[in-house]
Length: 265
Image (tube, rainbow, N blue to C red; front, side, top):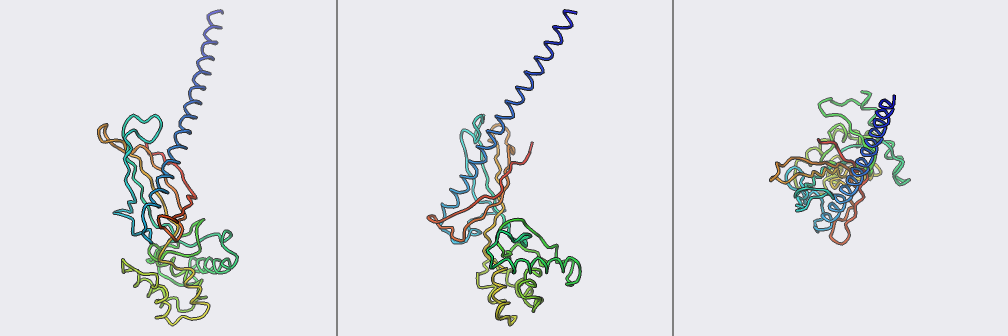
């Protein structure tokens, strides 16, 4: 009986010790995740301020690579080797805003018109071709849809909402033709409206709902181990950032609205 009692006591103590160890390990991982995430956040902000390019897309390399940074002692407090961080950006504005509550009051009605136009297209009452892709939606960001990354059907919804269905086919055709130019200018939307003969409020609304300079960007931050110990992806963070229209070294501003670590191991 004494042996049985001792064995039970030892088992309980070991179980408690194991629980405490797991709890401490979880706290340490949470601490590392937080500081690694903050470090990557600050790295993005520093990169944003380092260039005087007026358009964010002009700063990106192949695959949307924004920067590569090497950390000789690693990124996390207990890193055992050098690590490399690669930051990638992608246009995150090729979709319509699903909830206009965060917009200025004067833009809410226009946003709701775009939402209704999208619903009509999805229901089939607005025509359209399935080969034009699906209508993409997002939960945050500005009213405007990015001309560069939106599907044709998403553009059709935005244009239809802006013009109350006026000259949608002509305008979408002009916009699709305009975005074939890799160096598309900010005047492309105005020119498309002119070619379609759009005027008045419909023209003003179109200039609000389509943009060639997105301010919402999707961020992917990859942390890779040094090649000397085999290389490979150690951690990945993904998020979305609202970047101000001005990206100069003195006035760059961004707000990372989403920032989460993905399990890559």
